[in-house]
Amino acid sequence: MKKKALFLLLAIVFFGCKPKETVTSTKLDNKTEVAIKGNWRIASVNFPGSEYLKVTSFNIADAKCFEGSQWSFVSNNNKGNMLLDKANCPTYSSNITWYINKDGFMVIKFLTEGVKAKHTDSGYILRVANVSASSFQLIDKVNVGGQFVDIVYNFEKK
Image 1 (cartoon, rainbow, N blue to C red):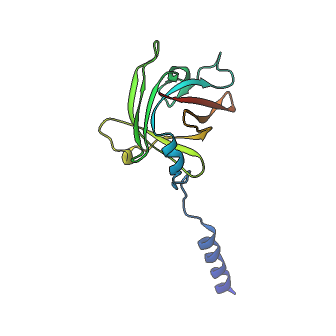
Image 2: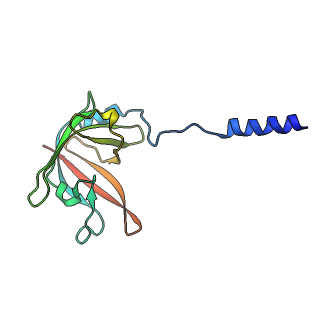
Image 3: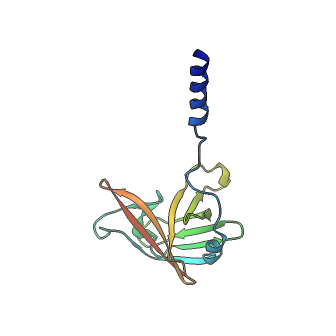
């Protein structure tokens, strides 16, 4: 009886523990990646209460400072860059690495000079929507006053 109980306990532990899984799928959506390759600018940033709330995007600057920012996406190596240079906002530029997975999310990392992407631990996961030849949206969920709201970054082709 003790052997059966021990075997049952070991079976529960062995089969009951799942290996750690990543938060996002790494299976790429190459079709969408190719659709957004090229040079883009953020035409507008929208979210509920944007006329009186300040939200910091990507731990860089106020979300509205990203309006007019320039982005380049290279689909064959999933690299690119971005430039933030709006008046009355901090100037910021960074190389980026990115990919779009089969679940419809863009995983993006802002790279520090001299640090490889594989050594950059933090990044952002945004939903990709409404992709066309001339525009697309990235949608981020953020906690504002205890409620999750969507911040929509509207990109237009340059």
